[in-house]
Image (tube, rainbow, N blue to C red; front, side, top):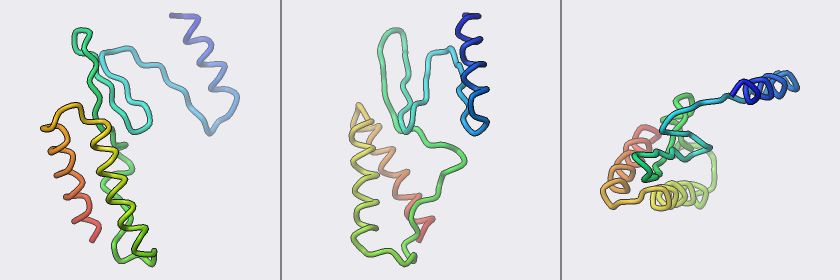
Amino acid sequence: MDQIKARLNIANEQDENIRITCTIGSTVEFLDVLVDNNQGQLKTSVHRKPAAEPYILPYLSDHPRHTHRSTVKSQLLRAARLSPHVEDFDRERLNIEFILLLNG
């Protein structure tokens, strides 16, 4: 473990804008996925970075309408891909609906 931490420290010294962290536990966040290991069973779900949420493309922005449709579609596809159960997808769909309402 000490060797891993030493290599991470060396990597972190290469560029001050990039930080690599080491976390040991039953869950890992990678990009937009949260992977949970529950007694050997892996479960995925949507991960949201606290700093980025609940922002999404505002409806009143000056983007073409197809961009707004694409945003909604991509959020729902992401939820479908990462939700292993219908209940998880439905919870995420409600979350997306709430975020869209907040953004007009």
